[in-house]
Image (cartoon, rainbow, N blue to C red; front, side):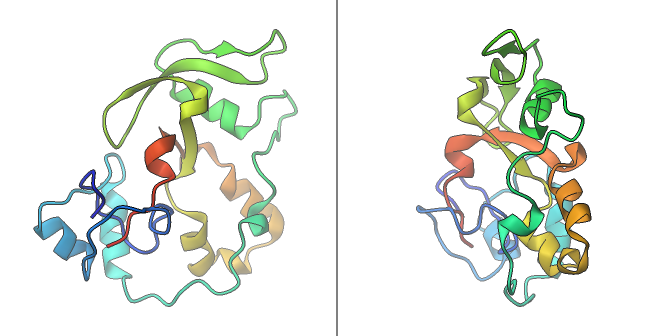
Length: 170
């Protein structure tokens, strides 16, 4: 369990990033000790809990899912910018008149409920982590399908960068 009380399974994209944590044998043990699941992704916990004994992801590389955020429609707004625009509860402000890079908006952290207004303090994360997808079939997908999955707006969620970049181990 992280110092913020969040429990993540080993398949979580946050699992290897936490530096301050209390280890547990399982997600269930973490939850039983008073930990909680991240807000908005509780439905993934059942799947993760059922797959706790999955072997480590062999040959996984983030680059197998493309090199960063894609701009598939060619409007200069990559999938990160589009996720920020879509999730902001107020109109976003752009860095320049070309409306490519988002600098401010209003996002609510799914972890803490904190309101974030600076886009630099927001990470766009995958609801279904790419390394988990790799170990559950994406390794056999064509590269184009993996890139589409990595940039799918349904699988993207704005999160508090400071928490997203910390590692949570259970």
